[in-house]
Picture (tube, helix red, strand yellow):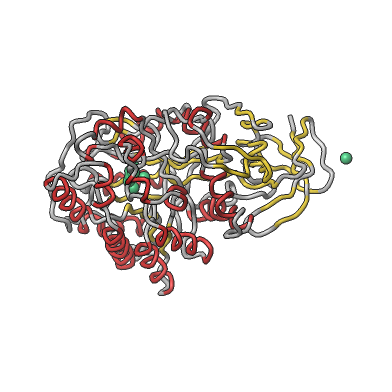
Length: 484
Ligand code: DUC
Ligand code: ZN
Ligand code: ZN
Ligand code: ZN
């Protein structure tokens, strides 16, 4: 059965024009004036854009003694309700675990997805097995990105030795390394000092992860990537120092990418001085929210192109889960939600304010991401032959964000009470209407895995295993099953 989106204004990363779109067999079959089909969707007064891609989510992730509370069903339902039609989640082996075994676990969880998805693979330890499995992950499993944590010491963190070796392996395989850039050694010392001084509340979480910790690690990751001969993507860029390291590198011809989160763009560190423990703890994430100076820097980065994409790092924990950290902020599960609010919040604070054009909005929420992750133009495009992942965006539709009405499984929303203008009228996931005149109509399991092929390899370093890195004992956590 064909569908036609009629009377809308198509907005892509580089064009704005009036045309109808014919959708058949999950793909865009035609674009042009006055098209007709079996089912017609009225887009009068709306922008018709590529569905959003969130390149950074953690659904049902074992982390800090628990599991994040949105799974692939509720998480992708939340996504499509806000106009996002694809998520990229992190398969996270616990240290010592086989990458392929971890991937199988994420494969099993993702069968419930309501929209398309892909995975990044995390490198949480280093050894010959990891080195060898990386090739299978890229060549057979369709994953071209590997995530490295420079923080979470004693759990997920890799050291420079391991990171340099892994980056060289990425270069050889045509894969892109991703980095969580915070100096984990310094964070661990600051945490211990703050606790020893009796600072155990959620506000101390922010004190333990100052912007310098992020700026230093970002610069280090970029320099190590450059020495390994590989581009690098810095996740959740939150501070001026981190942004400056990326901008400086780009000016020097280094291919470094930066990913601010919608939370860092729109919420600031005053949230942590709220006297309500729950309020502050619900906003504990890493990196923490920053002050206005840093927010201005991130917006400037999106405007100038030195930062390329907006994500969420969606990692939702209930209030009850957050309360594990009463009396010790280091035990508050790190993470916030944002999947369903990313697009409306960015439209409201970016496009409505004049900071971003609608075309730039499409670029940072979808097209740039598809290009960086090597899935363009299957995703991120309004072109004949592209997947019909489309959002019909009503710039006049308004709402006040409230947890009572959200799709996410948790009991609060960090954007509670915020007014947004600009919401989906329709969302299509590979041609299926999943938001119909504002009403969410998902089908569990409709989502499919999207393969991401390797980039042209830029370096032939480390094509065979060499014992270059001093082995260190793998520290296993108490959680079974891929726990960290
Ligand atoms: N930061 C978070 O806040 N949660 C998940 C992982 C991360 O790096
Ligand atoms: Zn007609
Ligand atoms: Zn992270
Ligand atoms: Zn993350």
